[in-house]
Image (cartoon, rainbow, N blue to C red; front, side, top):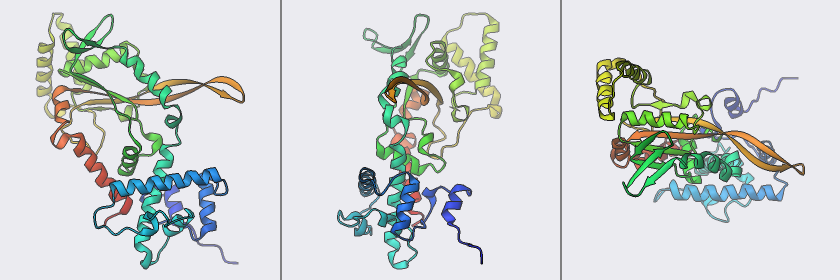
Length: 363
């Protein structure tokens, strides 16, 4: 008897070939029975009405997302998907996304795009943050907020403790990503999965100068707001001032054993950086959506979150680490981020363009 030589190409490429299913041009689901099996292996049961309704919920959300963000005026899009009575059995979406027929090419493209959006939504809505978002935000952000003080007399914001006070130009919490923003980010960044979204929670400090940026870093560590053993080192970015050069400069200034103010310190730092020339070693992380002139410090740390739950009828404390982002930058960079090629709006436009390419391929 001859051996079975048929292997599902996309299955092997996703499992072993390094090709995400989000980059697959087609699936390989032949009929409704295979579609039911596919859904079962994905984690849902087609025979369970509650889970079937959840699948339809993702389907409706995905359609709304595509219509809002990606259906351009005059663009040919199949009524089979976008009409509310078009697909009454969501399994047909899997079969349509697997079609090799030329006459169903448009339907296949949009079915595939819809499933990709549904896939991302499912992962975004089934992680720890979706369950414990309030606990996570409170345990990470409230301690940091407690050290940020508004001085109504001076009309200024300070990062302040019993032993230290740093004036800030701005302090911000990173706005919570809505679902649309999260979906676009996961589609745009090919090496990213929902499990690895590390910046759902974050804070931004804006300071006057380079020395103050590093003072904020020291403040966060000294006041136990950040535990540096929990930092994810390959996520750090420092395009402000080379770390080793900064530490060398501080060693030099301390050895002089003389009083020096912040302005003089920054002049000294500028001089040291100019002297180092091309040997200055900045810490960068590739991000094709971020302008290379965007000067900031960023790192990802993790916080041990503790949540009281009831399991098996008994109260217990659930513990898990959750990541958060800290950004620190000078005021000039902050202002530039509000306008021009560095702006957040331009950043998002670049992400949307990349997301569309991933959904539909080259058109």
